[in-house]
Length: 464
Image 1 (cartoon, rainbow, N blue to C red):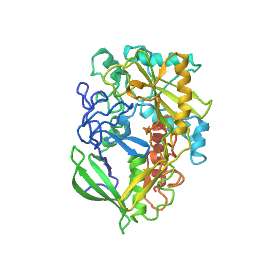
Image 2 (cartoon, helix red, strand yellow):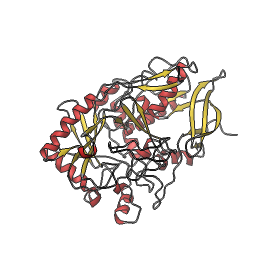
Image 3 (cartoon, rainbow, N blue to C red):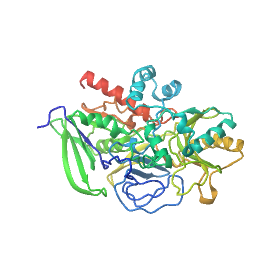
Image 4 (tube, helix red, strand yellow):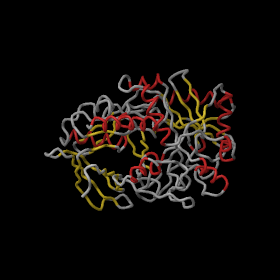
């Protein structure tokens, strides 16, 4: 019999192995079924023409919601498998603008941000890697922003620099140095959750991970236990079996999209009717956009070396980013932009279809696009280069997606100040759904992880 403290982790995606030489994952250059979740064609990461792929249970989920495409993960390790490894804390003033008095910045900055930095071994790109051929584009990016009057600062990330060096020397299969990251790094170059928090949990022998188990609904039985309807999936992400599971405590970590969809559906179908009106609200894109300028010779390394900040208009962050999705070097310089933007969407349950969908304003990222274009164009003009790639229809600023979906079960509104869902004991949110749409013009991963550390510490200490 399992002990009362046993933890079961359900993940809809597969558990992918690590290997220094094998290409376990697909890549942006030659995507196949390993790439995309239940999608038979590549939703391009750069606006390039679509590439057909076979339908499969890949690691990268791209879902269309009106004028916004949402990027998220489907794999054991979640978003840590498919993100670019950037971990940055926001400035106090922007953190406070987002969270108000619900979360203490001093507490986060003195305890929980440092705890996550230590656990994930965060560091900036070493100088020898920065000076290597694969990261030529990083040095060019820095030169261009300096010409426009900016001072680039190095970015903390979760990269294992010894593995990156092994790639450069030929001792490990090239991955980080050839632009892989969006679809996973199979050689361990990226220190994702399968190598730290999840691995630590499994070593206790009290946590079991069940891959390819998709939770389709949640509710509560008369005895107070939570009830989950679960589809067991085959490798193509097709349901082959249905199961009903129960638990005493339910922690939702399905990401902003998955957690919000489950909660809104449970409330509006009557499965969890005491969920409040804030469930499904406060969703945002973190002000994301991809930016392209060129022509400049560059390398292929994906790891982001540096960033700049601008608040001549709305607060804007630009990060050095390799341009993915092309089988050849088109001499483009890419950036990932984030804007502190107040636009918000909501999740709505449709009784006719029985589905919960994100409702996002038409051209809801218009302000994001305009704010980033002003900075991006200034940088390009100072270097006498163009923006976008008109020959292939690649725009200068692509704000039709988000790689950082946030909100839907906002801390202090849908939950208490520590992620306990209001209306139900033993029900918790521990992911990006807690964040009110933005983490202050920086990547959200460090803040999400630090909030999880903070919240679980309080939950364990209080016993509820």
